[in-house]
Amino acid sequence: MVDFSLSDEERQIRDTVRSFIQKEVMPLEPEVLRNERAGRPGLDLDAITELQLKAKKAGFWGINTPEEYGGMNAGAVMAAIIVMETGRTFVPFSFGGSADNILYAGTDEQKRRYLIPTIEGARRSCFAITEPGAGSDARNITSRAVKDGGDYVINGEKTFITGGNEADFVMVFAVVPDAGVTCFLADRDMGWKSEPIPTMGQWGPAALVFEDVRVPEENVLGEVGKGFELAMTWIRNGRFMIPARAIGSAERLLQMAIDYANIRQSMGHVIADYQAIQWQIADSQVEIEATKWLTLYAAWRAQQGLDARHASSIAKLNGAIMANQVVDRVLQIHGGMGYTKELPIERWYRELRLLRIFEGTDEIQRRTIARNLLKGHVKLGGIGE
Ligand SMILES: Cc1cc2nc3c(=O)[nH]c(=O)nc-3n(C[C@H](O)[C@H](O)[C@H](O)COP(=O)(O)OP(=O)(O)OC[C@H]3O[C@@H](n4cnc5c(N)ncnc54)[C@H](O)[C@@H]3O)c2cc1C
Image (cartoon, rainbow, N blue to C red; front, side, top):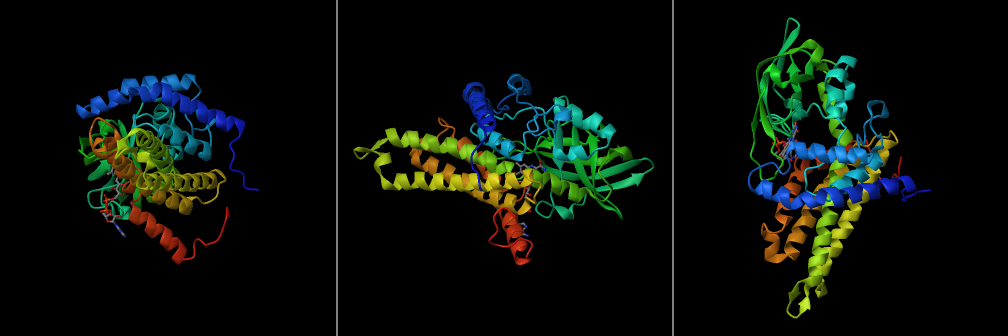
């Protein structure tokens, strides 16, 4: 039987996270807006660490990190539900105690030097595959890593790298001649440079430059020539987290629109009385609910060890479009006020636009979904198989 209910324990975790976000994180929103509008980071690293340690005391640390590394190992469904809750605020907060999943592909020594310190918060990583000439076409990267004695010498340029300004090491993908795309763990003090890229949003990514950066061969992550598969594992396994976050953001925004519609007067009535407004509210909830169940289904597949790639692409495409439609309607319902900086709607609007671009654009998700169907990799009509 299909069961949509949460267990008591899952509900308790969801409610505790919701209350933590409401009591500890949302009150920081005015400060975050002030900082960002003054050109500073919304929250500095110390403030984020302080929040993470507070959350740790409440039991939230390493949500998807295996227990042997001190984490909760909550599973993909619970992790998605938790991200829905953190997505309710634009404060740049996430629970501590986790690391990119490809670091688990490391050797024992790599785990000691990179994975464990990242989980503990002592090191910061970034993931660099995109290049100025290769984004959607990631197989076409041209950064090169040439073997020289016991080292690889990396040359090339990466762009739009989230966290690239702050990271002290990078998981960088480069082509090894005659072997193919390979992933390297490269410390900043090995010589790569970063430069912030101003964007319309607040997540300032970086351009990274590698000029004769020498990386010892023991820093190859996974196998030489198997980096592309490693990169795709990382991206696919986290893809349903994007629509999960979108759900939290969209629900928060929709509540703002509902509250405003119930008090804003126009032509002798509150605007909630007008069908034009009611339909925008109704359509928004329908779209949010659709994304919610697509996302939980993708997470459930991942948790069951089933292939979650197709379901994740559907959820990601749907969630990215949904969030942009909802924020646009919410701005519209607020009229001129929605367009001002007195309210945070314009801030959400700029942030949510990114969802349609990173980790596979809308067009690339559609291409993947269509290709799976046209080539018969996925059959229509299934439920849960
Ligand atoms: C803020 C931000 C953070 C990011 N963080 C990271 C990161 O941490 N690490 C990282 O490696 N990358 C990161 N990226 C890069 C991101 O993944 C790429 O921008 C994205 O994959 C698109 O690549 P592109 O920008 O080169 O666009 P292009 O690939 O040049 O695409 C341009 C347009 O053409 C369309 N298009 C391309 N190919 C096809 C096709 N075959 N069929 C139909 N349409 C097509 C695209 O959908 C898009 O509309 C980030 C990007 C941004 C903006």
